[in-house]
Every structure is written in C-alpha cells, then in structure tokens.
Image (cartoon, rainbow, N blue to C red; front, side):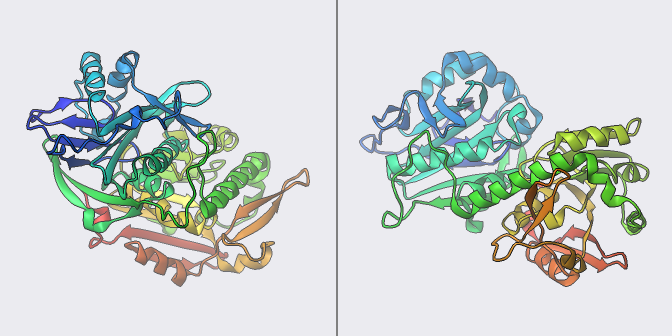
Length: 460
C-alpha cells in the first residue's frame, strides 16, 4: 500500500507524514495536502469550535456528526463497495480495528475534520465527508454508501459543510478533485457551488494505476454580498437551482401520475421504424425508460439492456412488458445516478427535451461516463415542429409547458425544443460529435460520440 496508514473520514497519511485526501461515489481522486511546518500555525479543528452545533451540522435532511468507534464496522464494510474501490484510495482490506485507530488519530489533528453523513430523521449512516485546511485553502472529499446514492445526499452534505467551513474558518477557497470517469462527482460539485478549474487537473498514481483527475474550486463568498449561513435546520438551496429542482420534482410527479395513460401517446404513431437506423448494439443502457415501450425493441438487438427511470409506477409497467428478456431495471434519478459500468450504447427517447438547460452539460457527463470506448449515444425526441402543439409558459428561465392529467389537474413539465443544428452545436461545445436529422414523422433522430480530442472523456 505504499506505506499508507489508513485513517477515517476521507484521509490517509503516508509514511513520510504527508496527507492525501480522497473521495468516492460523487468524487474520486486524491490530492496531496502537506501538514503545516510550524506547529504554532494552529487553526481550531472544526469539530472543536464553539460554533459547531450539537449534535452536528444539519439542513433538516442530512446530518453531519462526528465519527465514533461504533461506526468502525460499518465504515470497513461500506468501503468494499465496487464504486468506492474504483474511485478512492481506500484499501480493500481495511479492517474495523484500523478504522477505530484512525478515528482516535483524527481527534488529534488540528486541521482535519471528518463526519458521518446521516439521515437527519432516522440517524441512518449514509456516507462520509472530510475537510482539511491550512488556514486559507481547504480540500474536501466524500463518498456515499451504495444504498444512499441517487438521493442528493452528497450534494447536501458538500454544500452544508462548505458553507459552514467558510463561515467558521474564514477560508478563501475550497478545492476538490474527481476521477475523470466519475461523472457524478462533477454534478455534485456544481450543484454545491463549485466550478471546474482545468488548471488544477492532474495525473496521479493510485493503487498502481495512473488516474486522470479533474479539479473543482469554490471561492469564499463575497462578504459584501452574502449573509451569514442560515440556521443549521434550514435547507441549503440556491436561487435558480432551487427553481429547477422544484420544476423537476413537479415533472416527475406528473409522469408518475400519468403512468397508466402514458402508452396512449404511442398509439398509431410510426415512430418505431426510426430506431432501425440507429447503431444499437452490445450492452445497452436506456435512460428514462418510462413504461418500456422501447425496451423490448432494444433487447431484440442488444446483448443486454439496463433500463433506468425515477418513477416506480412506470417501471412496474416496463417490467411487465419486458419479462423474460435480458433486461435489468433500476429505479434512480438520472441526474444523480452513477453508471456502475460501461455500455456500448446509451439510448434515450423523448427525454432530452425534458432536460433543463441548467442540467444539460451534467446529463451528458453521465452519458459520457457510461459509454465504452467507441460506443454511441442514440436518441429520439420531439422536433421543434411540435412546439405549436404545446401550451408554453411565457417568460420562463427554463422552457416549460403545461400538461393536464385525466383528473383535470395541471403540471409544469420541462420542454426544450431544438433544431438539429442547434442541438449539434450545443453538443460540440461539450466535446461531442453528433449526427442529427429531422425525420418526416416530426422526430429528431440522432447519434453522438465523444470527440477524441476532448480530455474530459479520456480513459485512465
């Protein structure tokens, strides 16, 4: 293990005395962070300050509390998860005794803090988050247990700890690094107020492998324009993203309620033949699969299909439609889900126009992380000619339409129309090469592949 002595809460100490931070699930790379040379340079440890509320930091949904010896078995078991092993420096042989020793060691560190991420209501352990600083700049790492992924846990924890650390420690900047393939990490960082810092990208050797890592930074808020952190019980949300989250929640509620009637939209439509021209092959990932209209058609051409959707009601119908076929169904929020492996084809139909512009890049990061080298993203969606059939809401930051359910209730749904040229240009900005055409049946039919020159999609 290169002389690494494991410690808890996202940090390991090398035999030479330096520290390395790590993160997993929503983050993944490692970053060297030296101990201060002057012992008089002593900042109060986060957990020791009078400002830390008891029993910890909370936004009412997640709670960050100090590690205890009783957590050691859970920690040692949880880090054996394949994604944590893939994206962190956690040794696969970590024992509960080593974790106990690390918890005790962490208590003596003046400039490091580690928390268990818990459910604020039930106290269930959900993950791990840690921060280390030198008095001016901090570095943060985190991972989330497999059972807690896709629920926004990492975003809430990262936002909560970052906001509090800026206020309590007066840091000028907090940094984090993610494995280049861990697309969920970038999504979490951006939702928590971090931005890409390409000049911080690095290559590192971890567990005998060379990792390409991407950097993110969050500068301290401007004291002239910000307010003190809200009460720890208050949810930490942000302006435009707050509205997007609300809109996506309403969109999901609509499709859950609409599940029994959803297939009526396909009756008499000649859309299926458009699938014939797409390069569907190998292992296929279907995002936003809905009631599974396309799933059997994909399975007929694929080696296997993994179908993902956030709505349990539509998945129930999809499972019935695809029974006895080589299909695995997963209930997860597409925006927060981490692909467990690579696929030859990523397919989505009538979904891209429901992605808010603020989430467009993050969604395509998930697609890129899921694609095997040489693979294709394939999609079908409404053409801009369909705009005339929709009831668009005026003056919306996120293009939105009204949709009515059978009971007469109305819901807002995201609907972003593109021409083939507009969509290809947006994808080119993200490093994708796309071929998109408008079919005679008022559909966009497209394929896309990562441009080989774009370092975001390089494979370590």
